[in-house]
Amino acid sequence: MAKVISIVNQKGGVGKTTSSINLAAALGKEGKKTLLIDLDSQGNASTGLGYNNSVIEHDIYDVMTGNCQIEEAIIKTKFKNLSLIPSTINLAGLDVEFIKNMLETPTFKQNEQLRVSLTNIKEDYDFIIIDCQPSLGITTINALVASDSVIIPVQCEFYALDGITQLLNTIIMVQSSMNPELRIEGVLLTMLDGRTNIGLEVIEEVRKYFKNKVFNTIIPRLVRLAEAPSHGKPISDYEPESRATLAYQNLAKEVISRNGN
Image 1 (cartoon, rainbow, N blue to C red):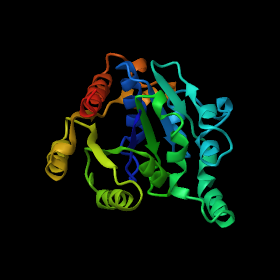
Image 2: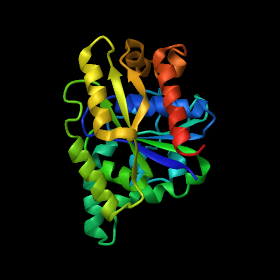
Image 3: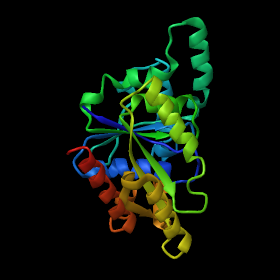
Image 4: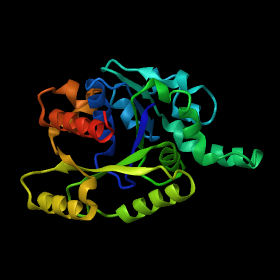
């Protein structure tokens, strides 16, 4: 049965999509059958693996609105053990579609559509990674309800913990009313520039706040890591010897270890 992990932070620019792509790819390289779900209407996780609107027949919007079966939306990528459910701009209309469904069907449960959809495929994967959009709207709530745990990426920059309290309150709300098994998998420090003191100060602050929930692995800020999505590849395929490749491989090993594998 797959472990479902959402990568969540309502703050943009924290390395969320980069980490979703590269953690999923690294888990695949560790021999784990992995599915990456792009749950952001910008579709950056999809384009980061080389898929754009012209090659996408069904997306996560189609799955969550019942326009197709989840199996029909899964793309088997060219990367080892990695599959993808892509996203398109259609996902931006999900709120309106769900309101319509609730008006027409009072028993419609708008927060559980992703969890219900995943039921049929969880046995096919070891890990399902969900890249959430930078908000705490209906798609992110669906992800939290469907997930076993969350990874919170925090950038090693000033105001790193800005908005974290709101995110933690949302997680507590989901735990109390919709998904009592949800837990924090870990906090991931990202975008570290080792040449600055602020990065080291943020690491200390985050570890003091979250204690043993913080992953040992820290993701560096590297130009090649930022370039990789424009080539439709995870960093491990774009530049296998990169420090970022090693970092995400170490992160994958930590995630596997934390889940007893």
